[in-house]
Image (cartoon, rainbow, N blue to C red):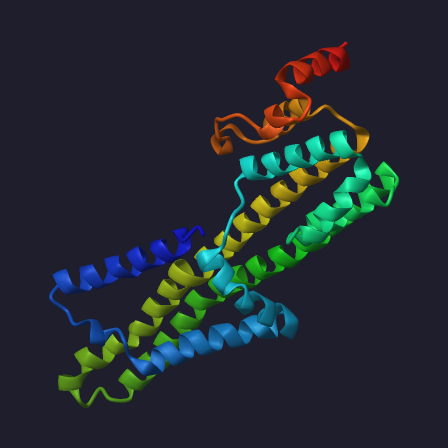
Length: 276
């Protein structure tokens, strides 16, 4: 679980509350139902109007994932692949069928089943790349929807302010109420800016980043599994996969390749023969 977005949103809104409190104002002055209904309601409405219904439903169903989304460390994926490479090397590719049945990752399970069934490596690569592309498009569609909301919200806030100021001009005969009415008018603009920069755009950025990380994870699995299918030696495969991971995401430590049944000495000898 990576609650970075949840923590960030709490701190962002907490900063606003702190500022209002230190200024000696009341937070209830900002919680006016009319401008909030206009800003949030109209923003979501025009977001749906500019996309499909399925896009909007999919985007909002992705909010829990954006707030508490789980990311898989690259080293965990590498360790999984190395374990599979050792099993395939010891028991053959058909042994991966049992791993496919027990895997909870649909992408990994499907790839393992195809390897066990003897699918041609080139056909398997095309199949996995197509699946990666489809899943990436789905994830990015949700991020794009919230980015659209982030673009609409400030303008809709200004619309709300203009509407309120029109009401203010209708009551110039009541000077004692003008200050309160003008202050209330600008609350719509405030919520337009707050919702865009504190909610919609962060959600868009978070979902976009999660989509990138998921694409990188699937690419790592694909290259690793294709190497397992071709019979690449586990220790060499571990180094190859590690080289695909950005330095900032690497985790020092030994891969599981050293636990092969042939023993450490036999593994080193095999690596030497493969390199030759």
